[in-house]
Each structure stands twice: as C-alpha cells, then as structure tokens.
Image (cartoon, rainbow, N blue to C red; front, side, top):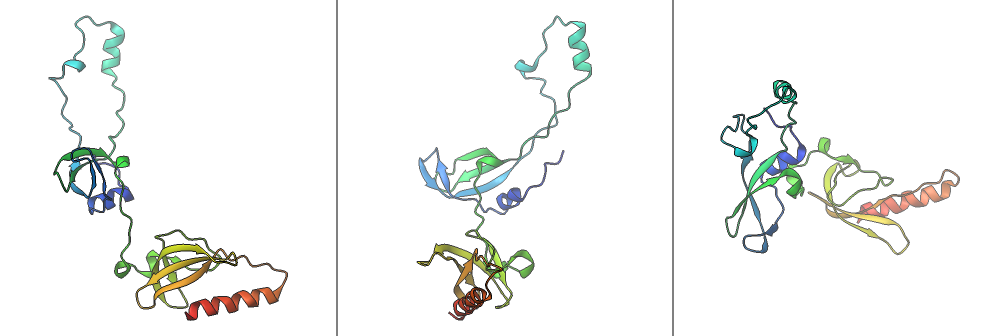
Length: 189
C-alpha cells in the first residue's frame, strides 16, 4: 500500500521542518526528520481487544465474511528533537514546514509573473519581466499615500520596492500616465 503523495510530504522528507515545542526538554527546538512510518499489512493475532467473542450470531459471521474497506492511513513521520534527541511519531498535519525558498534555486517557470495589479504574500516567488530576474517577496508595507508596496529580494538587483494592488480606472488617461511614471520611478531605485 503506497501512501498518497503530497507537497507537504516532500518538504518533510527534505528536512524542511520548522522549529517547534518539545515536550521532552520543554523548549522550542529544531526538529530533525528521522523516518517515515509505514502501516503493517500483517493481521494482529495477539491483540486481545480485537479477539471475537466465543458465541457468534449469523449476523456477525456474515459481517466478518464481508469486511468493510479500510481507508488508507494518514502519513506519519518519526521526528527527533535536536536538543534532547527524543523521537516522536507525528501525523502530517501536526508538522509545520519551513517554506522558505532559496533565491539561487528559483527558475522563472517556478514563479508568478509580477504585475503591479497583483496581490502577493510574503514568501511568494516572483518573476519580473522588466528586470528579467526572479525574486522573493520579503516584506509588505503601505506607503503614506495609501499605496501598497512589496519589498522583493532579487539575486542581481538586490532589494527593490515594487507596487502591488494598483487599481487603474478606465476613465482618465492622465491618471494612468501618472501611475506608469510612478512605476518607472520605483524601478529605478
């Protein structure tokens, strides 16, 4: 039985796990991936809780003959505390992953195309056509005039302030020209 593949699972297997609280040493520590838990296919004959009662009715015999399909097990992983070395078996949903992306590993095909009309989250990977460069959104701010800006870190250009969530009205062309000039000014920084 193969467990379903998930994007989060790949982060866990790569060891990109966020630090979390350890019950063993009672502090926030770095977590280390040890291994993946796989369910056993063997029946548990020695389990006293699963043994049937000696007197069975016809109904129970028929239910045993037609077993219900078992749902696939949830992905579980062995995670070790880096400080006290205590090992825990955790379900996938209990593990927080570190989604921090490396600038050197980014490719344009992996990124969103930057547009001043778009809305971006911290950590998003962007491709800027004008700069022909990929970057990662590091911060989000609002200016005094109410405009929304993102601070994007690029490999060659360094940190740049870019506008986001720019609303263009179709009525006045003068306003669109002002926005275009503002964008050009921001890109020159």
